[in-house]
Image (tube, rainbow, N blue to C red; front, side, top):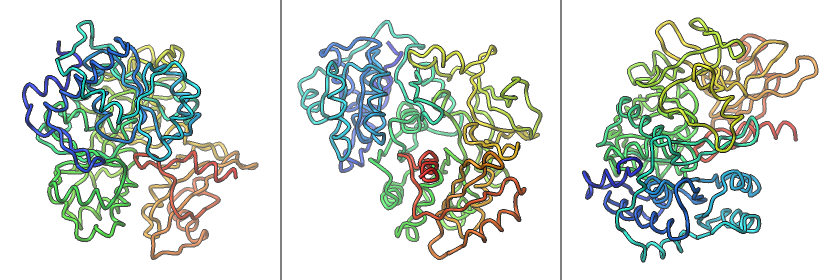
Length: 503
């Protein structure tokens, strides 16, 4: 059986090669044979406690070996790996548990995780809970014999990943084996190789952690260096000492790395390129890496429900087409449409980005209404991202449909304002949100983290924006804050910024 047994197949060809370095566990190393052995043992253990094909196996743990164990074991057995976001409130995690209905809940008890687990235990009495150290003891006596699920097909679900829920309650996107495999094809066509070594800082409960590079590179035979969190000093040191070839992060992480005491002496010459995802890489920050470290950038774009290897901007175009996500990857159909009429937009007109291809989700778990709303009659998936495409075929994400706000009847896209703010040398990090206004309906509020040596005033920032933007786009309020609220992968949490405005 080949469907789903990703790590078993790779072990056939590269068994003694280095597959994973768990930096959160003192740099413990695993070959492909060792990962395959562990996946077989976890698979047999899942069967021992009563899980069958289609049953969900939940995990709430810091990034590390147990996420890979469960993911590959589920591939072998037909069970469904379901990682939960440990950054959430316990009640929010409980909601995810109630939606996904796991039979087993694997967890670590570090820091705030113990509080979440204790709360979930009181609300989910029929779930089997097992701490990660206890799981290690189980694996020591579990069989390492090959395990398989002969009835598994390409459209069966391998894992559930929860969406952000910023436009409502989070939904569990079904990631099928077909989606995983076609994403690997697109990743390879985007110049990722089986010989690459990749530093993974994205959390494993997001598509970035699992599918941007980590499992595609492992399945192709490369090596993953897995962090437990985002530590700029550690990132610079590991890239230098291990001579890694690829690194990916959101722009805020790249910014934090330049502020590290290790930045000046760090040698990043081993990197073939870096990928920026989640938001456009500010040109001044990109130039800093190019000029000081000779690092070239590629911009990527994808989403949980599709891909996520959907678009790529080549390093050669990174400056000429700054702000673009590039062109669709090999097996992706993309277009920009009017979100109300579904008519295709002309070049440089803003509309909703729609995608079609074999790497689309099969839907939202036990949510047929949301699944039906996701696709149109031509089977295009509506992303909710506002975009445009230029006359050369390069796509640009203008903003999220949910982040756009109306001011005096005009559409305002915060990302456009943020791009201008990042060109101001006084600004280290920024984010713009819409806030209620009696006269205009909504106006912008800019949150800014100042550069260390800068001390701009609110008036100076607003005057600067007035010189670069239409009047209706200029925020009417500027708030200076010490640090931005960030998600696990380093994205700015605009929901938290909006709470600051309300409070």
